[in-house]
View 1 (cartoon, rainbow, N blue to C red):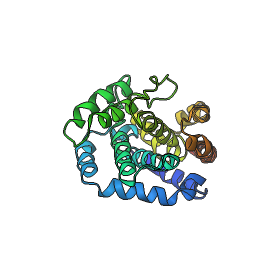
View 2: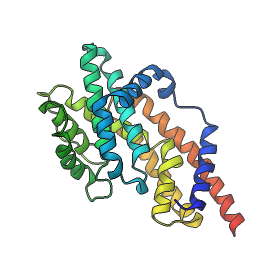
View 3: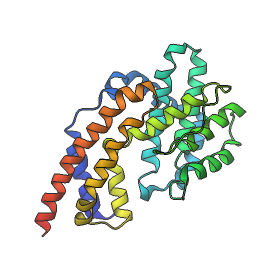
View 4: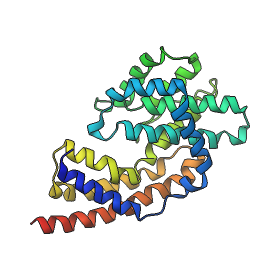
Length: 254
């Protein structure tokens, strides 16, 4: 990353640090800790992480940082959403593992056209090497295929337990990233990749902000619908401050 963009990213992180965490990350701290423990300690997950890290498209802002956060939030959402069904603890952990697999694999084709469909196909190839049953593989592939925003998801397949829930949780976890992560991480990698300077960033900012707000109505789980809007609004407030900083930065550069 260019040093000029890195400096702007550090300033964005400073601005974001002044804002409180959204309620999702305070209310569900224990659930997030359980998801993180599984993410960093499960042998199969660790093996997949090592395989995928060299393949991630880091320069587009959808690499290790992004996929780690999506994976942990997917598992957290699955843990929360399964409470009413009261399944066995071992079944919940297995489902969380499936969600983490989906999170790790969901953007392996991020630089390709129709990256969700491409990612689903690529994921299916990876999953043959892991201890997963057919329903689990289908659940992961289906979730990846249906994680893209503003497109119609495949019909619900009630005959396969937890398929829809895994898909919905991956979608919501991925869209949580449209909050603060957009303005502290993804924006700067994209700006560097596209060789953008302050003027171009300023010109594109209003369009990017409108796109951020548009995701609010698309959350799919009950938890996502309740807590997702605040995550997006929190990110938007951070974005507004960064925009003002860029305006000042551009005037100083002029």
